Length: 385
Image 1 (tube, rainbow, N blue to C red):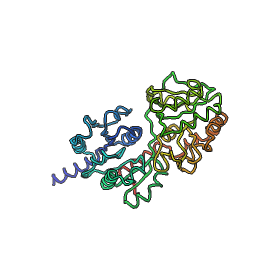
Image 2: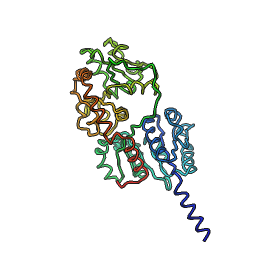
Image 3: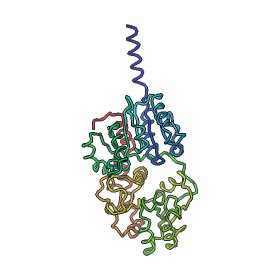
Image 4: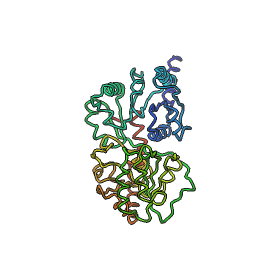
């Protein structure tokens, strides 16, 4: 009788212990989507473990919220590294795994099932992940992940809608979850916006494939910027990789005056967020949706959107995005080819900007508590999908 009572007490005690959840990031990118997940899980009372590499770990701001870390010290070709990760998962009695970026390395880790572990995966690019395109290696990677993982989430409603048929066909749960949480960074006193200036930021490293800098700079050469505007291109670039950018920038004659750039300089988190926090408008500068250079379409999400959602700062987007439901209440839209004209109008549209800012503040989609509950409920299977 006493033995049964002790067993029952042990069972109750184990049920009351916080569950151990592991976030896995084996690539060298997408650290920005880990901030929100660490915050959501730790704030909800779970033990959060991070399995990653040195580079990604160095980008995590709130390391003190982690209950444990596993940092890869050897190349991923060393097959024993995967066994070490699996041993870490067993040792720490991980009950749930969340894959932050699915890739070939993760698929090797998932070759064998994790016993009694609930697995979820964040998909950043639905087209690349769910369509093999005749690539045998990618098809194998997809097959492994779909066999081991039955819950996937994406970062926007438009991505969820685009992938819903595939989810139904392959019998897995699919949810859209916003991860716009940003840790608190110290503002730099040296970065202070004068009252008579209007700041527009273009966040992210300067890359030809990701943003349409060429069209912007060509347009500025023909049409001057409003005198109060400062265009802050908030990322570093290498002239040998993207020489056209510097050439056109020189031709505008505005570098260091109305166009602020950082060249090869590393933009620290404190510097980045000091500019973003004070900005009036965010310019994702994405190629028009559906164009030949469009990298996003309806299958991919831009990290710039999360910056807008987090700070409740409106964006200016090409009109081809005006039917994306996620973006309607937080964006202004311009006609293709009229970007500079649209930009120059904003110093006189401050009331409209403030109205949109207030709309974002009251929109439940951009509420941290709402998104935290939605995320935790999905990861922990607390809702029916």
